[in-house]
Image (cartoon, rainbow, N blue to C red; front, side, top):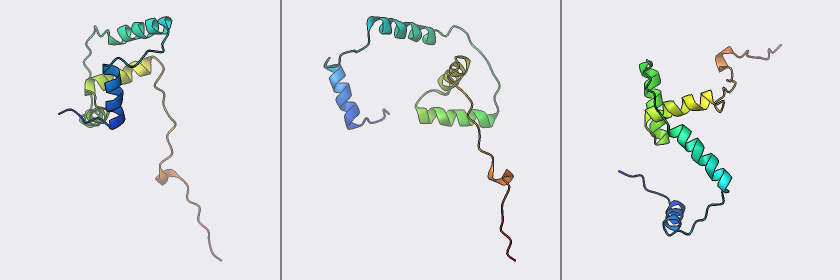
Length: 106
């Protein structure tokens, strides 16, 4: 069942279908975008990997939230990693490892 679209999305879709939208990209930008799309869409190799059941379940949940097949999400994450667009964020220390400061009365 398709996801219902919001009013502004419906307006945008209607404008597109009526040909009222005009591209603002230059010819060189369009050529660059087309080349990137071709390179991204070219999937000529198959890879098999083993994942823990928990990781696979988490990936499938994330994919559902994003509205994409989980294999596509995995491929996207890997692509972003190898192209340098996916970086690690420093993690906050868990509360249990933080030192607690207490005030003594006396």
